[in-house]
Amino acid sequence: MDDFLDLPTLIAIVVAVFVLFRLRSVLGTRTGNERPPVDRSRSANTESKADTDDTVVPIRPHSPASAPDLDDERRARKLEAEIDQFSRGDMELAEGLKAAAAADSTFTPKSFLEGAKAAYEMIITAYAEGDRQTLKNLLEKDVFEGFQRAIADREAAGHKVDFTFVGLPKIEFSQAEDDRKNVLVTIRFHAEVVSATRNAVGDLVEGNADQVQMIADEWTFARNPKSRDPNWKVVTTNQLD
Image (tube, rainbow, N blue to C red; front, side, top):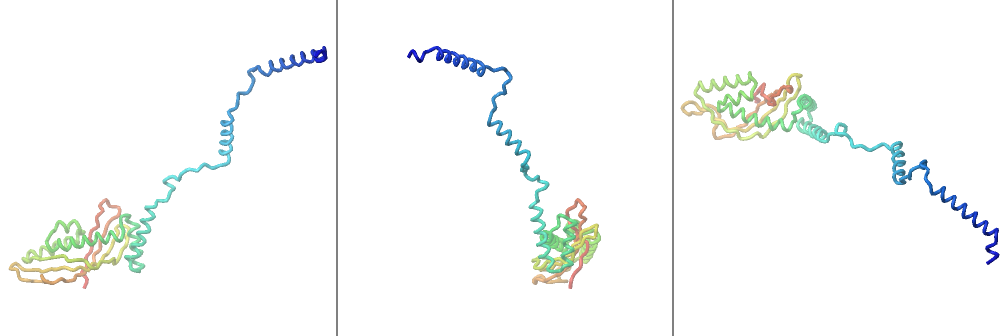
């Protein structure tokens, strides 16, 4: 025990304690020049973001302007299919229908035929009944005047028409074109009607009240695609044999 606490050992212990005390006093004191503690997660995120900004192109949704309009594509395919169907292999007619559709965005073969059917029935029924106002709304001026003269002649003769529209078993495109002013579409109608014209005393003058007869007409409809009026009007009529 006396050997352990000899003078050299005591001196070494004192020196060691002194050195430790000095180190602690220096390491445990802030001078104000130290760097602040680093948030490792924040630092890692910052480095990752920097790397990403430099090397990865951000993904953005396509703007509506650059995205394809699926409705337009469907309409185009539908129009093409209708033109193929209603042109019946007639290339000249197909080109005419394409020209009509290009000039007038509201034109499609199927819807036009539906409208033409309705117009045809209205016009020939109005003619039989002497309904001038309906005819005036659906016919071009020169055509209307021709119908009006025929009605006036019939009335002057004291004739009256008993008329029934039975049906329209056949309707087809004959021609279509864009003449740079109007879109012109010609339709052939094959209709079934019952028509009997009687004089003032009721005697049959023309037709047959008890028999369905077939009539055939070829009419041309026209519309200015720049006009605000969406309606088509009949500009020529031709009775087929």
